[in-house]
Image (cartoon, rainbow, N blue to C red; front, side, top):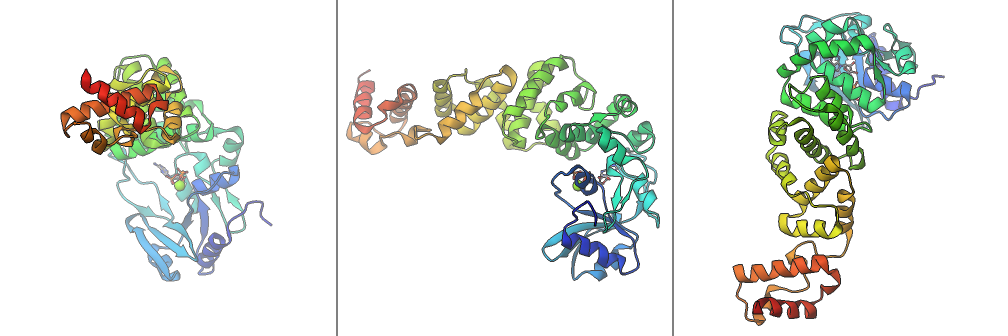
Length: 393
Ligand code: ATP
Ligand code: MG
């Protein structure tokens, strides 16, 4: 009996490959997460078999990365990414191996992986291959490079982001030599694609320790800047109070970086390759409501729900407070969220002699502002009276 619970269908995939005379093991994040008792979100298998053989063994598969020897296998409602054992080759561009070389050796495949905790394999019976001390590092809660950190970060600068991202997700410390190699090599992160960096940053800020994003700035992974990373750290800690929504937390982080490090939030989001919608919301910081529920309701009327939500989240991150919670309470309430939800319509205003257009819009806005302050006045009779008063002004 193995002490690790490999789901039945994943185990069957491993055994099916083995019974064809090849080696097959789980590898990487799924082994690490199994050892740690964490939820597993994807299953990676490493095998001595070539992709053609794997594709031939299973009725349903997709060639998701055959250049790298990867086939996705679908089996009775489960799927696994199956990749042929590979070994490290040179990296001249600091992010892509120059060449893909396959190997018959499991250990060589493990040696190309980034951290000891990610360089373990597990066979179908739960037997673990751990040539670099991953189990001990997991027990000590330490992130350590496989091999010499300087060289590994020079090969692929993304590994520096990954080290910090895993420390945020798992609560592990980065081992001292690995950490100083990150500082030494940080400037090479400028060669990384925006998308790869964004993915790691989003995983970091959506973890239980979003403040690790401030360490990314401090260690120089996110570029050069002047400013106070201790303040940024304190602000990034406040992201914990926001829901784990990538866009919301990223907009708030960019606002915090703008405040603490003098970075332009819009440019920061642009460099990360964020879409137009996210970048537009970064303009919401100009309208951060002061903390009262009434101000937040007014802001919704003036700037709309989306901008107000972003402004509340950014405001809480920079200044502290509970704007976001108040915003959510307002969203869930029966109160009108815009002029369209007032208990009076254009028809009733026309009956008072108002014609559609600017004049009517001004009256509706005024009524909305009134209802933000006095929600109990949102009934047709009262609003008609108020509209008449507006018209007399
Ligand atoms: P998670 O999926 O939970 O984010 P993971 O460890 O599974 O974490 P993946 O990006 O899915 O991360 O990669 C799977 C495995 O591939 C890793 O565990 C690691 O062994 C290896 N790996 C991924 N990226 C790199 C890299 N840049 N350098 C070296 N090995 C890597
Ligand atoms: Mg994974």
